[in-house]
Image 1 (cartoon, rainbow, N blue to C red):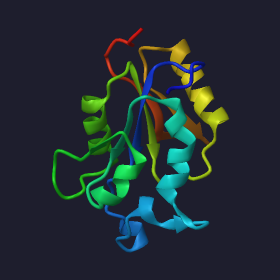
Image 2: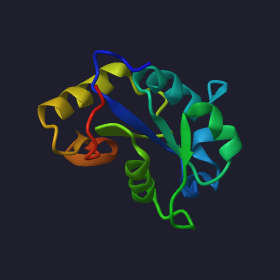
Image 3: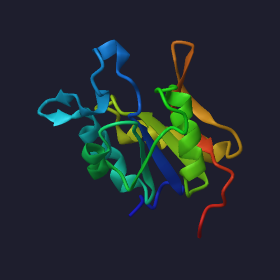
Image 4: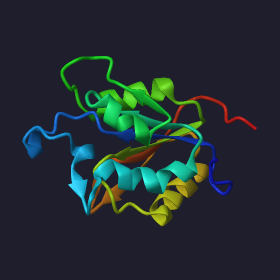
Length: 150
């Protein structure tokens, strides 16, 4: 059940990468403190939504425990995170879609609530984090063009 204090929002966890900087390992399944990275993120975001999507291009059976629905890139060959976001937008059921990378085990609810609040203030624009002047599009909320359900 979604958090009643937050707007209706699909959540997309990005785990579809090639893992090039990690020797080909599937980042979301890399263990940290005894659990896969994706498990930490799932624990934080699952209570916030009724539409939890996970973009993965391999290891679907292992990822299935961490999402309501799994999606894959339309293009083969690990085309990058924007392809995952595009597939997520096509699948999202809510008025907004929160995008998060799978390798962020320490993300916290206050940060997510801040993003949500900004999205409420500017409902027709994508909202993303900025750190030291650099935009972080993999931490964003994007309007989907769908109407929020009552």
